[in-house]
Length: 228
Length: 125
Image 1 (cartoon, one colour):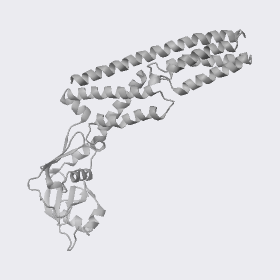
Image 2: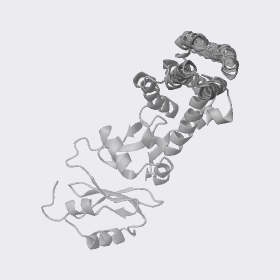
Image 3: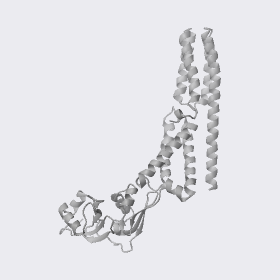
Image 4: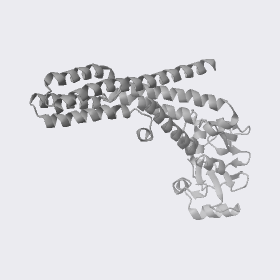
């Protein structure tokens, strides 16, 4: 039993470090150590249940050791801001008044597409629908809605440039080619490389963000009759 | 806060008690078995052992394993069962050398199994 407790502690600590390093992508609505417990508790209970050669007490001891670790970590986490920061991380402000903060997204191993997906789940389809978006330490997205947000968006914005990378498939929806896009970017004094985000909706309304600059809402010259 | 601290203390105590009980119980059981096996070993060495001498050890083992099932791997128990059964056969056939080597294996198992529960680097990893 002592060995099981020690081994559980080692595996648990390794998983806490790994999950913290993985960022917010891997967790959802749980603190990292809670997520780890959920992840391993099912297996711990199943192995002695299904494998008749393993004494049941192996599973019981490991589950009890995990419970003890959970309680201990909860106490440590609540004891101050530094332990909380180390164990659970801090909320990440990924959209601020200047637009999307790519560095903050990168720090949390997230991409612009992950942010757009999380925003859609919250009912925001355009990056400028919110003034602030925060990935909480439990992986959930909280958003502070933009008061000037269009209440009835006519079409969904499509991501065309994701952190300097052109999404060719999405560009095809616009029925445009790279040449036209490069031309459009040069009118804004930007290149593909230094464009962090470009989304365009069916009305030609574009969210454009150049590296180290505040985002702009501009008009993208859509071809006649192009709609989605 | 009080509730969670209390639950932590209770679980820690249960685990600590379990660890102590497991360690002392396993050591105690295997110590008794070792004494019985050593007696059998001496008799086999003197070529004076008979089936009943092995049955004494087997009986002790059968009563010990009822509880040991809760702590040690069932495969190890099965292994132990087999070695004793083989020793019974070999002693009844007066195959002393073979019986002696089987008894040595039993003694080795009695020494090694409790060691598997010791908190040591090798056992943890």
